[in-house]
Amino acid sequence: MKSWVIAGIIAAFAYGVYSIPLKYLSSDKYLKAPLEVIALGLALGVVVTAAGFAWLRSGGATLLSAPHVWSYLSIGAAAGAVWLIGTLTVTSAFRDPATNVAQLIPLVNANTLVAVVLGLIFFNELQHGADLGKIVIGGSLIMVGGYILSA
Image (cartoon, rainbow, N blue to C red; front, side):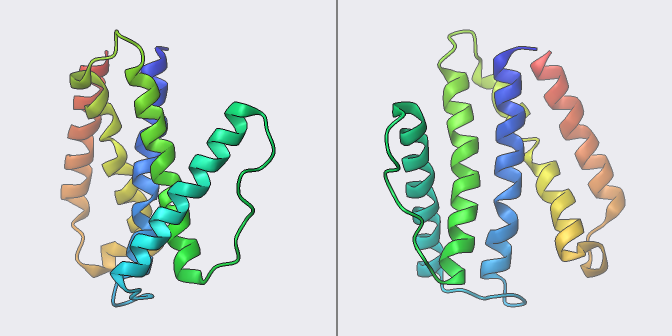
């Protein structure tokens, strides 16, 4: 399997997963965190993940210690960390000159399916108006399109 396909799959899951804590943070039904706090939490997740990435790459001591933060910041940081994993895998895939945007990005956009499935599981969205028939058809089209473009 080509490395960009693996990178695309990892990025798809990462981009799909991060929408779950964002909904939990922002929805009126759940935490309804202020947008500024969500943004700070995302930034914190990016900084912590970037520091970990730098530490792993350099083999040095930990650059940042785990901060004790409020629940809004920690959930936002988790979403930011997952988002950065996806961004780093896409970026690393683009290092290969053979990687085509037209092939990689449709594969990465399979994150829609991850977010849909997680939304159905975590937020019971079928009971809140989600149409399972349209979800199955749309998801199938995404997978077929991603497969065709990545083959």
